Image (cartoon, rainbow, N blue to C red):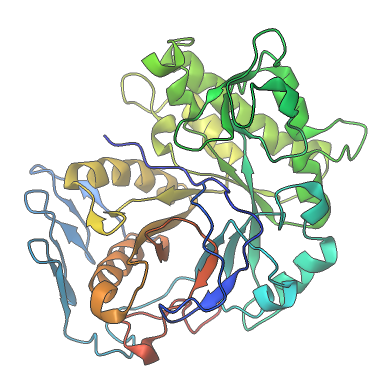
Length: 413
């Protein structure tokens, strides 16, 4: 199974643009980062439900309204005439932005999305963070009240954050210096220079994230809570893979790495809800959905502990790897995990980076229609993002411009 790519925050100073066309006038384009119906496996390996079916031999998604031909990428929908009528959008909209730049709280608030994943700082450090007044303006602005989740990497350290000391590493974005760097700091992530694997189970790392029981300590999670975010969106949960595989030196067994990550998520949840007393504070891990499975691919007591600690999960690249369809077997395996979350009442937020960079209905609507049909049919909340993965624009797809869906949907719950 392929491991979905986790998003990382990259260029923090670019401007955020609300985009309904492929012409990004004035937008910064800095470097890349960072229900009721669902599928189940049947005898022939097909993921199916009354709304959608996935044919594992050719990867085709079909139902009475939409069909996708994988050979030529064509999607057909008898109602997809540009008015959004072919796909029933009974889920609130999702927006995911990691490079908010200088977009004001009022501008963010005017969007019609009901779910929002937002980097809590315009610049990546405490100085650029959204204030409590900002978050309230975002939440209450526009046509829909919003649930706002703050991005927080808990499995990697980022060198632009306040907690990071550049003296720990050899040069700009270099490797940690032995005897100087703290024990919890691991090797550089070669895919995201300036980001470092961490031994997430170590108390010193956890204290940098959490703060103290005596009150606000101006640590990342404390500042998120103080700003009034509805919850936290935890990235790099899949760090537990790293430390149990060859690239991490087999430092831990998978079982031990899994247990320690689940305990870390439990600690974060308890800190917000109990230590800080924020009843209903939401916790959404991103990716690594199969952490609920033990080494025998079974659910166990740790699975229950994990579900008790979280309110939902964010998933990337579920149906598409950028503009290419994911292998059917990979999607099927991940759907098997996500159905467990959904059936336990957890919200599943799905971001696929399937839009061409210069996207139009002509070059991207077929994928968008397929993505929305499959995600909504499974009871998930979808967001179609651009293939560059920069997450520095708010992507809107109005049916009035020829799209088969409205992103965001013209509705509020």
